[in-house]
Length: 155
Image (cartoon, rainbow, N blue to C red; front, top):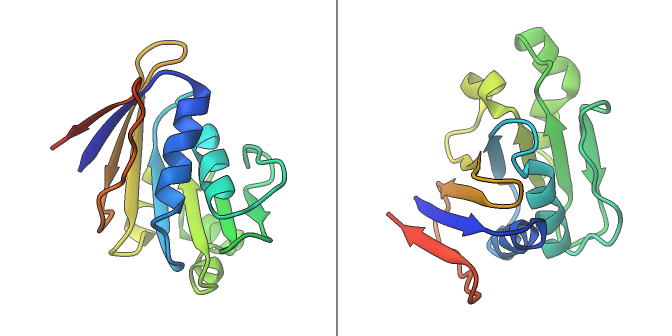
C-alpha cells in the first residue's frame, strides 16, 4: 500500500493522472471515502491520464458516466444507492467489467462482494478543506509521483 498527501484538488487530479499511466485495461478501481473526499477529482485525473479530453463529473444522479475517446474507456460508477444484487445488476456493472476498459466505482463498500479479486482500492480521507490522505492498494507497480509539495509515505 502507498499513502499520499495532496494539498489541493489539482494535486489530487495529478495523483489520479499518475495512476492512469499504469493502467493497461481491464482494471477495477474501488473508491472509499465520504462526501467531498476527492473521489471525482481523482477520477478527473484518471480520465485525463487515459487521454479523455471532456468534462468529468460525479455520477451521483446518472449512476454511471462513460468517458470514451482516450487510450482506454473509463466507466465511472456511483454505487451509493446500490443496496443489493438486483440493484447492482441493473447498473450494468458486470457487463462493463468485460469491456476491457477501466471501471472506477465510488461507494465501493456497497458492492464489496462483487468486486473482482485484483481490484485496486483507493481510500480517501479528508484532512482539511484542501488536504487529502489517499491510500492506494493493489497496484502491481509503484506509482511514480513526485512533486516538491507532495508527500509519499509508502508502507
